Amino acid sequence: MDGPHRAIPQFTSRQVLSRFVLRLALLATFANFGNQGFVITFSTLLALAAIFCSIVATLRREALLGPDLTHWDEAAVNAAIGYAFGALA
Image 1: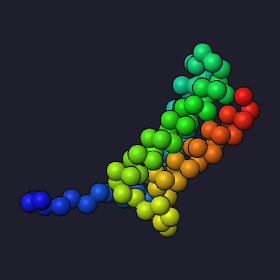
Image 2 (image 1 turned 30 degrees about the horizontal axis):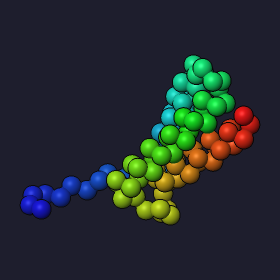
Image 3 (image 1 turned 180 degrees about the vertical axis):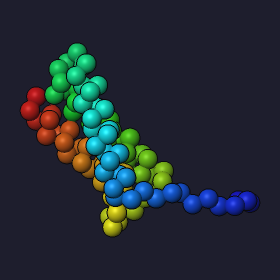
């Protein structure tokens, strides 16, 4: 590979946390408009968000257990919240 190698920018834990809260609010807003009810729609959207975060973490080659929050951490929290909401349905 010729040419300059660009480093993938890393996010701080604060940026990841604010991104997570914003994504959670957006998913909750979309879940309000679901035909199947809020709980089922929200748990499904959280499962999709967990898959999305896992793919992004893989593509960015983020450390699984690093000192800062990453997309892996977001995926785990999205999956856990989605599972908890799915258990309510």
